[in-house]
Image 1 (tube, one colour):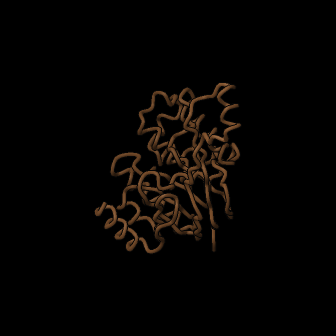
Image 2: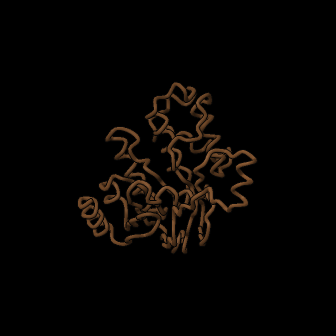
Image 3: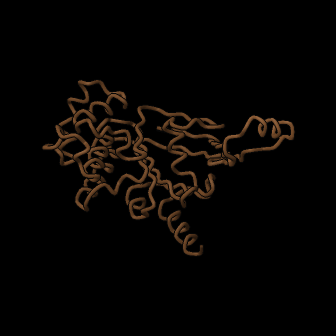
Length: 245
């Protein structure tokens, strides 16, 4: 059963190269039809589907469109053309820990972000102990986040995202959030959620993570799908291509 489907998704950014204009310069450009910007297509004609219980990997060099695609799917960016169908609750971890308020305690931030993800205060309260145990931060929930280390904030954010009962999770470079033991816990949690029907889209430059977790891979290049299919095959093709370059 499909959890998500994208059809011919395209996203255009308009890049301006000149500083703010004077009125005189603006009038001159208008009458002489001078173009002050460049259209940059970050995504062009991207189509794919995601099944329940499936993990789809997104790979490609920096600037290939991976994060832009996740932001479009998460409704952070509007798309220029195309269609998206989403079945169920979607949550995104695009910049792990972004939006946390450093003057708030860990507990206050959990309530705040749980509400952003659409959970009632009662449902958040029922998950607090589980989130704190997963993040190994039970003794720090009443401490302001400004006193947390970077790793502690990342663990709290990841623990939240994997405990909010979403049908689809978008994760962008968010698995390197602790020591080896904690990363193994993250992998095990993702594998457990997959077995329960949660669908994932994972962006990572770590090919070992993609190989371990993903059932299929999309290789993006300059905003287009260069290849899509079996994880092992696509990773081998990608490795050969990057070695040649």
